Length: 304
Image 1 (spheres, rainbow, N blue to C red):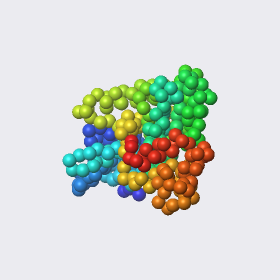
Image 2: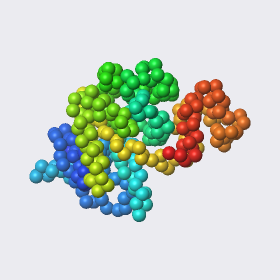
Image 3: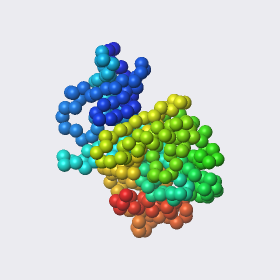
């Protein structure tokens, strides 16, 4: 428990070393206490999504005195002269929501599979949104994304043109801190506007500001939802790293492959060409999707 003089809050915005913290009594613009910055740093000390203890100052600002242990995080690696630095895109998300279009642009499922592996490694629940269903029809949309629900990833089929899935997506977001990610052009802004009028515009304004140039100050922000919870746009998600992961670990991050590994004839099976491989047999029978298996092999080979 923090001392009585301190308030507990959630960092909902970071910019230029200052943090907006939502507390039970309102928002405070805070800076980090100097002692927290001492010593070598390999990553962001405080980030959007962190729970913190703040000391309210007489001028209405605040000082972050303590940061609660981070349970999980979406991290991007930033090579620097001193070594690799871990930029935290979002701390402690309750879920990651990946938006892909059924068409225009064509869905990049290998990118989706890489995102899902990152979530498995961080134990972050993942939800897939298949948007622009009106362009292909529901039957074709389910052909494209139907491989995912049987292996534990819910798929919400949406269309801002017809209203399909908007209510379901709104309910999925309510009461949670959600990381929203996906390639450009998939309709994230339109979806957010459909969920909550003006939300897509607010998110886009911040994303456009961040993307203006390499010298532009980085802004990260959680946007509140009327029904409770927050959503964070992840414009840098494309460069999320699958870091500190051995090839053999990937077995455990593909839910449909993990239970088959112990059935292989050889303990060190790479699941590529060995005889008696249970994974290859499952691909041949259709138990494991050929598309997912290809993603697995490419990630295992170090391809992004």
